[in-house]
Length: 154
Image 1 (cartoon, rainbow, N blue to C red):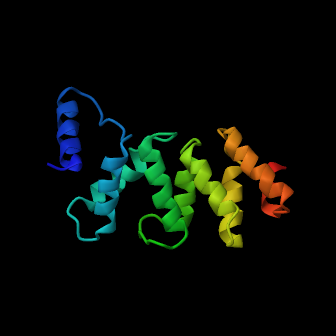
Image 2: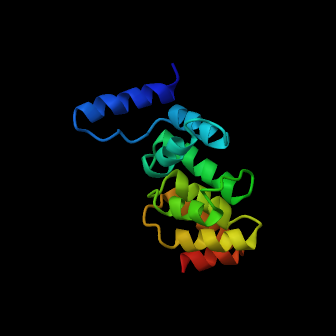
């Protein structure tokens, strides 16, 4: 039985108890969900999109890492998901509350594509959960003359 099937069974059990589905915090389950999203003909694609967008825990969970990396791939054009445009991917990253999402946003802001860097910088300016490693990375880029890093810090 797949992790996804087990998750659906758990949802049904919780529903009988009057409970909502548990948020997804496991990277293996979310990886399976992403594979279903990538397959346009998958019978569970629509539900998988819903779970990916609305039911994955933000923060520093292993699922948040997987979600952040998939959103990064969408933004960079490495993968296309019609329901998740690059601008929507940035919006989803903005709601993830730090951790892996900030690392992805820093990668994008300090990258070579100016348009993507600007969008990432705009999102980073709204984030309050940056770790010392994140601010150190920004400081190093600022000292290295990266204007976008200076803009984010200001």
